[in-house]
Length: 114
Image (spheres, rainbow, N blue to C red):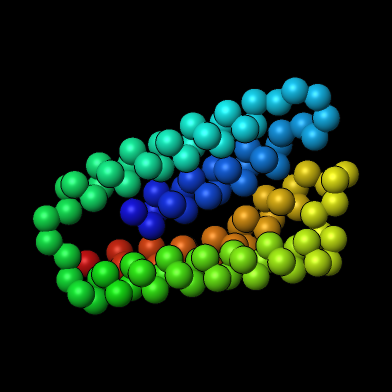
C-alpha cells in the first residue's frame, strides 16, 4: 500500500509540475483520476491481505505518519521561503520528491523484512 501511495504522490507531483499555470488545464481532472486509482488500489490490496504482523502494521503506520509530518514540514518550508514561485513549475515536483522520502524508506524496509 505504501508503494501505491508513493506512486500516486509522485504522479500528482509530475502532473502539477508540468501543467500550465495559465489557461485551461486538465490537471485537476488528472489528479482526481490518480486519487481514485489510489482508492481502488488500496481497497484491492487491503482485501487481498489475509494476515499481517504487528511489527508490519507498526512499520506501516509509522511510515505513513512520518510521511504526513515530513510532507507538511516540506510544504511549510517551501511556502515560507517562497520556493514555490509562480514562474517556476518544477519546484513543486522537487518538493514532492523530497516529501516522499519517508515513503521510500518505508517501502524499502518493509520489502526487506518480508
